[in-house]
Length: 607
Ligand code: ARG
Image (cartoon, rainbow, N blue to C red; front, side, top):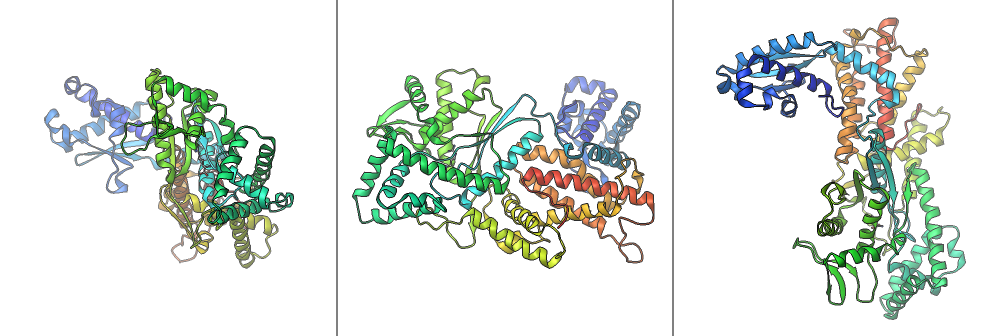
């Protein structure tokens, strides 16, 4: 087994135990075939965690083999352990694990001196590439995130999608995938009819300058207010949208203006956040791509007319039919998503996965669309390895509650992301001035930390949980926050500045055998696996919690006291000891730095 995605210590253990069992019990192996005990791959999959961590990193119970091997579990375990260790001793690569029998269990213990040496060398030599892999070689990930709506301000509603997607894009790149970050702004639909009418009635060119998007929002809000008493407005809006669809020059001109001012604003926000995309296209891009898909669906016999509209009914009773075209000929949000799914598959054929990072409110919508695509591929008898259905995922996430402010656009009561970022930077600045008034780049650092607080607050919970955003919580330098990690990073950098020599790679690793150091080493060693898990389950949260654990574990080393009760300093008169500890400091700094990058945060060197 040389699968890069697997824990190599577990692999060594599983290989040795299965080989030992085959040597010892050839008859049982013949009788059983390649089952658990005899097959490294399945054995790997059934390893458990020992109750007590000091027993080992993982364990394999042999109880159920007592009957088959006609012997008591402890005897089986001890025989296999002896043979497995003999095999490990004979192998040419330095073995990190020992197999230890304890009752009916085979425990895998890691040789800490080898683990320490291997891990630290891998981090210090790999630097920011530590944890990279070729897992995604020749595979493509499409990740759609952000996708705000034109002519509406960038509110905190779209923040979570933006932050999650930006992080996942970085994670997949790190894992070696070709990664395409997609932004799909809402720039089409009947609301543009409303915007056009509102602008023609109450707007002026001046509204498109300065705080243009806010002005547009005010017009939109006014439209809804006046429509409560003026019934004709909705009709006028429908009319205007129809004209837009037909290419009426004045309507198109206004629509283009709305788009331009919105994009200028979005780009500014993305710049502030440090968020990037590889492919940006709005819903309107799909205008000429819907008809071919509708035709394919019709040809496949999947459509029907219902109350004048063209629909696809779904076998799942819990899902309403998908509306492709209304009675008046207008297409819908779902029609565009269907066309978009086909479009993405055409542009990136055989993509590995295509993710839609969108709020949980749209769960049914994505189920509907993905079901339709699956039905179409069934009907067209697409070969099973050439299907996009099954490769598309709605990566949903919970709500973001922002104090007691509601976030409905219609009411105009919206929390603007830019205001949130500004306030965060302002609060961070106050803290810095209090803690470190001599800091040189105060404003720049305050921005990095304020932003770090906002971004991390979106990633410190599992994505399906709701977030309750509280200012004092997200900005704390001590809690489980972005600023706490940034602060830890800055402190590590300051230790290295103090050391003021190149960090040694060849140190006496045995000087790091204390429990506190070993906990840090284990977390460093697990980092590559954590990145993979985060990618597999679309959970940057795995990385954020891992970094918090690492920072906490390092602080235990940092704050450790000697027998006399004074702090056992990292940098002391003992050069060899200092060298080993500084190597550890550097490794932790590199991993926190890279981890923060994968989450989308900057790591200041001083704060
Ligand atoms: N613009 C939409 C909204 O703000 C989100 C788009 C989600 N992506 C998609 N492919 N439908 O609600």
